[in-house]
Image (cartoon, rainbow, N blue to C red; front, side, top):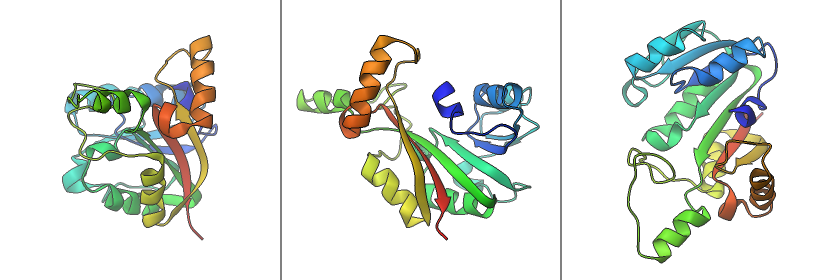
Length: 201
């Protein structure tokens, strides 16, 4: 979460798409004094997120998208969302319409060609799981190239690209080593990609 939070500035107006129970919103609104509006499909998670968000819109992104969301935002965050929806290009286009001048989208998504997946395929295994790189609810898979290609397709240009390692403790030696490898060889060692992108001028 802290690695994602580093993409935001204090006091921003943020739309957190797929906010879940509001963990990121709690950090942004508490420590960074951001105003966070959430979007969440699950009614139970949406209720939890309302403790940290100024408002939460419960909706099915496949059917309703972001149409009708009020306001303008300096940052719109898609946290592990685009791999779960078939209409990712349309969602990103709708997000562009909700951005303030000089606003940006921030997208995180798993790296399908991570070394773990490569080894599994090499050994003849491709089994979906309840979570992780092969989450059974994923309908799209992304590499660094295809993620950047998606953003370019809908009119965004990246301003920052970062990587996660799958290790939660960012101060650990294991994270530091894997992070160095991820920066050098992102297609092999990045567990997730995080991209900040602005509409092309």
